[in-house]
Length: 421
Ligand code: AMP
Ligand code: GLY
Image (cartoon, rainbow, N blue to C red; front, side, top):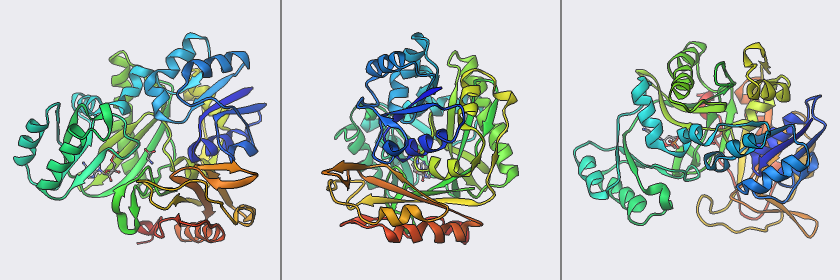
């Protein structure tokens, strides 16, 4: 079968890397892909949100399965367009993807279903939002309603910061229309975990848990990014994971079906494990980046078969397992990310690093210029290593990171360290 993977980040490189190991895969295309993906798949020059052009390509090239990486095409309705054309696609419909596209929709859904989450209120008016904030004790969490590339959540330790955050979103409109509504939320404490599940709309199967590292600096300091590193398995007991399946994942999939938005594809729950139990921070309608890199490095199973079963409603008959080792991904980023950064800087040392055993280097923001590999984005590489136990996985990944360099390369030094403590 011919497969199309949409997107150009580390997550998509990991999807292509794992799909390439499936016997049933004859050829992989990626749109637009990246230089790492180009080593295993044919990259085509179509943007991830050019839905009509992607559909035409898929029809013309008899694509048997399309896998959508990023959220934007999903919230724009790529699945609906592809299915109307008779194409198979892994990912939720436009109406189902609202679970990520609108945080207020997700919060209201959780409320209706009694799914544990932080207290909140939604506002369309900045002054009313401030009035509400004033009646609550900081820290407060201020969130833009719509998509913001993982940057739309502002943690505000003091009231004036909450006011600034509300103005930033609603008056300065730094996230554009995504800031038409703002959510003010109770600040939760505990440890964070990402649990992803695959569903055909009826059966819901958990993937291995992972822990992301969202803030830019060591010790979880500084502004949030898309994710600076992740490891799997993340710190969650089987008992808590079962609770998340029973209290969160299954009720969501059931409710979405009942409300006329059947959910199919990957459902990602960002969770805070609090003293009172797991609470949902957010839902995503797709694989996480960088969580996918360590998760898929541990998957023992045929990814094409799993995906096709999800698309065709046969997931109840599917089984897969996980490598006992820990996989850990360190994101190497451009200096300045998540704000402004320079591009086009030559990357050195990838050859040696990629020859290391149990190491895979997933490309994200890279490009080829004059035959050389250069930086082309904020998150540049996801250096992922496997080791028995988190300490060995850390050692493996960082050893490979040390082989790689470019002017202004930045990475966190403490990915996985919370698990060691
Ligand atoms: P989100 O995009 O909603 O996952 O938020 C990004 C990050 O902000 C999360 O990974 C958490 O670290 C933090 N965060 C979001 N909501 C809350 C909350 N209610 N309490 C504490 N931290 C939060
Ligand atoms: N790593 C967080 C996300 O993919 O949203």
